[in-house]
Length: 224
Image (cartoon, rainbow, N blue to C red):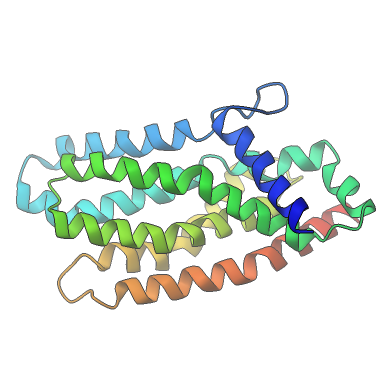
Protein backbone atom coordinates (compact mmCIF):
# COMPACT_ATOMS: atom_id res chain seq x y z
CA UNK A 1 0.00 0.00 0.00
CA UNK A 2 2.81 2.42 0.84
CA UNK A 3 4.48 1.68 -2.49
CA UNK A 4 1.22 2.55 -4.25
CA UNK A 5 0.95 5.71 -2.14
CA UNK A 6 4.40 6.86 -3.23
CA UNK A 7 3.70 5.92 -6.85
CA UNK A 8 0.51 7.99 -6.91
CA UNK A 9 2.29 11.00 -5.43
CA UNK A 10 5.11 10.72 -7.97
CA UNK A 11 2.59 10.30 -10.81
CA UNK A 12 0.68 13.50 -9.98
CA UNK A 13 3.90 15.41 -9.33
CA UNK A 14 5.27 14.33 -12.71
CA UNK A 15 2.17 15.77 -14.35
CA UNK A 16 2.40 19.03 -12.43
CA UNK A 17 6.13 19.65 -12.82
CA UNK A 18 6.28 18.77 -16.49
CA UNK A 19 8.34 15.57 -16.65
CA UNK A 20 5.41 13.32 -17.41
CA UNK A 21 1.75 13.40 -18.27
CA UNK A 22 -0.92 12.21 -20.67
CA UNK A 23 -0.19 13.85 -23.94
CA UNK A 24 1.29 16.89 -22.20
CA UNK A 25 -2.12 18.19 -21.16
CA UNK A 26 -1.08 18.61 -17.56
CA UNK A 27 2.58 19.50 -17.95
CA UNK A 28 4.00 22.44 -16.09
CA UNK A 29 0.84 22.96 -14.09
CA UNK A 30 2.77 24.54 -11.21
CA UNK A 31 3.99 27.48 -13.31
CA UNK A 32 0.63 29.22 -13.79
CA UNK A 33 -0.18 29.56 -10.04
CA UNK A 34 3.30 31.00 -9.38
CA UNK A 35 2.99 33.48 -12.25
CA UNK A 36 -0.47 34.48 -11.05
CA UNK A 37 0.80 34.85 -7.49
CA UNK A 38 3.66 37.13 -8.53
CA UNK A 39 1.42 39.10 -10.88
CA UNK A 40 -0.94 39.96 -8.01
CA UNK A 41 1.99 41.00 -5.79
CA UNK A 42 3.39 43.14 -8.60
CA UNK A 43 0.15 44.89 -9.51
CA UNK A 44 -1.02 45.63 -5.96
CA UNK A 45 1.55 48.40 -5.21
CA UNK A 46 0.46 50.20 -8.39
CA UNK A 47 -3.15 50.07 -7.17
CA UNK A 48 -2.59 51.46 -3.65
CA UNK A 49 0.53 53.56 -4.18
CA UNK A 50 4.07 53.36 -2.89
CA UNK A 51 3.36 54.07 0.80
CA UNK A 52 5.72 51.63 2.52
CA UNK A 53 3.72 51.53 5.76
CA UNK A 54 0.47 50.81 3.93
CA UNK A 55 2.09 48.08 1.85
CA UNK A 56 3.67 46.49 4.92
CA UNK A 57 0.35 46.61 6.80
CA UNK A 58 -1.70 45.05 4.00
CA UNK A 59 0.95 42.99 2.21
CA UNK A 60 0.40 39.77 4.13
CA UNK A 61 -3.29 39.86 3.31
CA UNK A 62 -2.51 40.32 -0.38
CA UNK A 63 -0.10 37.36 -0.27
CA UNK A 64 -2.75 35.14 1.29
CA UNK A 65 -5.44 36.20 -1.18
CA UNK A 66 -3.02 35.53 -4.05
CA UNK A 67 -2.10 32.12 -2.56
CA UNK A 68 -5.77 31.19 -2.21
CA UNK A 69 -6.59 32.17 -5.78
CA UNK A 70 -3.48 30.42 -7.07
CA UNK A 71 -4.57 27.22 -5.32
CA UNK A 72 -7.88 27.35 -7.22
CA UNK A 73 -6.31 27.44 -10.69
CA UNK A 74 -5.48 23.71 -11.02
CA UNK A 75 -8.77 22.40 -9.55
CA UNK A 76 -10.00 21.03 -12.88
CA UNK A 77 -6.82 18.96 -13.27
CA UNK A 78 -6.75 17.31 -9.83
CA UNK A 79 -9.47 14.65 -10.15
CA UNK A 80 -11.50 15.12 -13.34
CA UNK A 81 -8.92 13.68 -15.81
CA UNK A 82 -8.60 10.50 -13.74
CA UNK A 83 -12.39 10.16 -13.65
CA UNK A 84 -12.63 10.60 -17.41
CA UNK A 85 -9.92 8.01 -18.07
CA UNK A 86 -11.45 5.47 -15.68
CA UNK A 87 -8.44 5.24 -13.37
CA UNK A 88 -10.58 5.19 -10.22
CA UNK A 89 -12.45 2.17 -11.55
CA UNK A 90 -9.16 0.38 -12.21
CA UNK A 91 -7.85 1.18 -8.74
CA UNK A 92 -11.15 0.00 -7.17
CA UNK A 93 -10.94 -3.32 -9.03
CA UNK A 94 -7.46 -3.79 -7.59
CA UNK A 95 -8.78 -3.13 -4.09
CA UNK A 96 -7.16 0.26 -3.51
CA UNK A 97 -8.97 2.55 -1.07
CA UNK A 98 -10.29 5.84 -2.43
CA UNK A 99 -9.25 7.52 0.83
CA UNK A 100 -5.60 6.54 0.31
CA UNK A 101 -5.73 7.72 -3.29
CA UNK A 102 -7.21 11.07 -2.23
CA UNK A 103 -4.60 11.48 0.50
CA UNK A 104 -1.86 10.88 -2.08
CA UNK A 105 -3.44 13.52 -4.31
CA UNK A 106 -3.50 16.00 -1.42
CA UNK A 107 0.21 15.46 -0.77
CA UNK A 108 1.05 15.77 -4.47
CA UNK A 109 -1.12 18.88 -4.88
CA UNK A 110 0.59 20.55 -1.92
CA UNK A 111 4.05 19.68 -3.22
CA UNK A 112 3.12 21.08 -6.64
CA UNK A 113 2.04 24.54 -5.44
CA UNK A 114 3.03 25.01 -1.78
CA UNK A 115 6.86 25.09 -1.95
CA UNK A 116 6.91 27.13 -5.20
CA UNK A 117 4.61 29.74 -3.63
CA UNK A 118 6.81 29.90 -0.54
CA UNK A 119 9.82 30.65 -2.73
CA UNK A 120 7.84 33.20 -4.73
CA UNK A 121 6.78 34.86 -1.45
CA UNK A 122 10.36 36.05 -0.96
CA UNK A 123 10.05 38.09 -4.16
CA UNK A 124 6.51 39.20 -3.28
CA UNK A 125 7.66 40.37 0.16
CA UNK A 126 10.20 42.69 -1.44
CA UNK A 127 7.53 44.13 -3.73
CA UNK A 128 5.14 44.64 -0.81
CA UNK A 129 7.72 46.17 1.55
CA UNK A 130 7.49 43.41 4.18
CA UNK A 131 10.33 43.31 6.70
CA UNK A 132 12.20 40.16 7.71
CA UNK A 133 10.01 39.47 10.75
CA UNK A 134 6.83 39.80 8.71
CA UNK A 135 8.24 37.61 5.94
CA UNK A 136 9.15 34.95 8.51
CA UNK A 137 5.61 34.99 9.91
CA UNK A 138 4.04 34.84 6.44
CA UNK A 139 6.26 31.92 5.46
CA UNK A 140 5.39 30.09 8.68
CA UNK A 141 1.72 30.67 7.94
CA UNK A 142 2.09 29.30 4.42
CA UNK A 143 3.87 26.20 5.75
CA UNK A 144 0.97 25.61 8.14
CA UNK A 145 -1.88 26.73 5.91
CA UNK A 146 -1.12 25.54 2.39
CA UNK A 147 -1.63 21.83 3.29
CA UNK A 148 -5.16 22.80 4.33
CA UNK A 149 -5.68 24.65 1.04
CA UNK A 150 -4.41 21.58 -0.84
CA UNK A 151 -6.78 19.30 1.09
CA UNK A 152 -9.69 21.65 0.50
CA UNK A 153 -8.85 21.85 -3.20
CA UNK A 154 -8.76 18.08 -3.68
CA UNK A 155 -11.98 17.64 -1.71
CA UNK A 156 -13.81 20.25 -3.78
CA UNK A 157 -12.38 18.80 -7.01
CA UNK A 158 -13.73 15.36 -6.05
CA UNK A 159 -17.14 16.75 -5.12
CA UNK A 160 -17.49 18.58 -8.47
CA UNK A 161 -15.92 15.88 -10.66
CA UNK A 162 -18.21 14.86 -13.50
CA UNK A 163 -20.30 18.02 -13.28
CA UNK A 164 -20.61 20.40 -16.21
CA UNK A 165 -18.74 23.57 -15.31
CA UNK A 166 -17.27 21.81 -12.30
CA UNK A 167 -14.12 23.96 -12.17
CA UNK A 168 -16.12 27.19 -11.89
CA UNK A 169 -18.44 25.65 -9.29
CA UNK A 170 -15.42 24.34 -7.40
CA UNK A 171 -13.92 27.82 -7.19
CA UNK A 172 -17.18 29.21 -5.83
CA UNK A 173 -17.35 26.44 -3.23
CA UNK A 174 -13.72 26.74 -2.17
CA UNK A 175 -13.62 30.50 -1.59
CA UNK A 176 -16.04 30.74 1.36
CA UNK A 177 -14.65 27.58 2.97
CA UNK A 178 -11.13 29.00 2.83
CA UNK A 179 -12.06 32.37 4.38
CA UNK A 180 -11.20 31.31 7.97
CA UNK A 181 -7.72 30.25 6.90
CA UNK A 182 -7.32 33.53 5.03
CA UNK A 183 -8.30 35.48 8.14
CA UNK A 184 -5.99 33.51 10.45
CA UNK A 185 -3.07 33.63 8.03
CA UNK A 186 -3.26 37.33 7.22
CA UNK A 187 -4.09 38.26 10.81
CA UNK A 188 -1.06 36.51 12.24
CA UNK A 189 1.19 39.29 10.92
CA UNK A 190 -0.84 42.11 12.48
CA UNK A 191 -0.23 43.38 16.03
CA UNK A 192 -2.02 41.12 18.51
CA UNK A 193 -2.28 38.30 15.99
CA UNK A 194 0.09 35.93 17.74
CA UNK A 195 -2.58 33.22 18.02
CA UNK A 196 -3.32 33.39 14.30
CA UNK A 197 -0.74 30.74 13.44
CA UNK A 198 -2.15 28.35 16.05
CA UNK A 199 -5.68 28.78 14.71
CA UNK A 200 -4.39 28.42 11.15
CA UNK A 201 -2.59 25.18 12.04
CA UNK A 202 -5.74 23.83 13.71
CA UNK A 203 -7.95 24.67 10.72
CA UNK A 204 -5.44 23.17 8.31
CA UNK A 205 -5.13 19.98 10.38
CA UNK A 206 -8.91 19.54 10.44
CA UNK A 207 -9.11 19.92 6.65
CA UNK A 208 -6.26 17.47 6.05
CA UNK A 209 -7.97 14.97 8.39
CA UNK A 210 -11.45 15.08 6.85
CA UNK A 211 -10.69 15.76 3.18
CA UNK A 212 -9.54 12.22 2.19
CA UNK A 213 -12.74 10.70 3.59
CA UNK A 214 -15.05 13.30 2.04
CA UNK A 215 -13.26 13.11 -1.32
CA UNK A 216 -13.19 9.31 -1.24
CA UNK A 217 -16.93 9.16 -0.53
CA UNK A 218 -17.57 11.57 -3.41
CA UNK A 219 -15.60 9.39 -5.82
CA UNK A 220 -17.43 6.24 -4.71
CA UNK A 221 -20.78 8.00 -5.20
CA UNK A 222 -19.67 9.13 -8.66
CA UNK A 223 -18.63 5.61 -9.65
CA UNK A 224 -21.95 4.18 -8.53
